[in-house]
Image 1: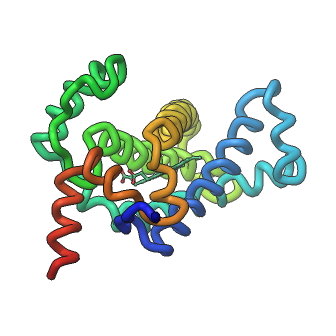
Image 2: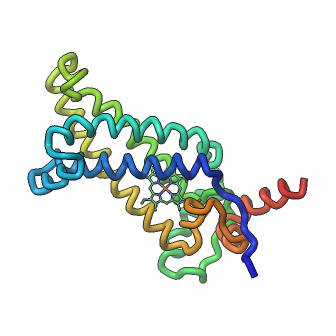
Length: 210
Ligand code: HEM
């Protein structure tokens, strides 16, 4: 018998997400290649060093623009609520003790997911603004050198935080069984929804009865 499912993402939202992931992987790989000689071999991914240098900023802009789509679709569900602070306070115990810890009921996203959402947003804004400031082909000539140096530093810092954030995000998506299906098929099992996001599940059930 087929497990009852609840729709979580439509096809447009999923395509948007995986397009952002593709840009992220290519922008991160090309950024690493430009960052340190030990990682220079990654430039082969984009057809050599010249192409890497040309394409990296455009990939970053594509990622930003595509992320904007996700931002506007998901921002409403990522507004901070009091149950999120409570959830975050208990997250440490939940990670070490698992299901033995009773977590507060949350909506479509939990406190951890919301922190990651806002962290992604902040990092992408910093990456865009600072990247433009030292983009040699277009804008760098009109930015004073000391300012460009600060921009390079902040760009690397934001990229580092973003990469760490994506590792945590992807790990959590695999660790919480049944989550990946949300972004692959678009649906989750009713049991998953009831267990991890009871307030969202309740709203979905109410909406489906209307
Ligand atoms: C291989 C890497 C990735 C995997 C496996 C992955 C997987 C997932 C999954 C399964 C969800 C659904 C979670 C849920 O509905 O509870 C999700 C949501 C989401 N993902 Fe990813 N993702 C990856 C990379 C990224 C990247 C690079 C970004 C953006 C920089 C991103 C941004 C988001 C956002 C904004 C959401 C909606 C959740 C929210 O708004 O809090 N993901 N991802």
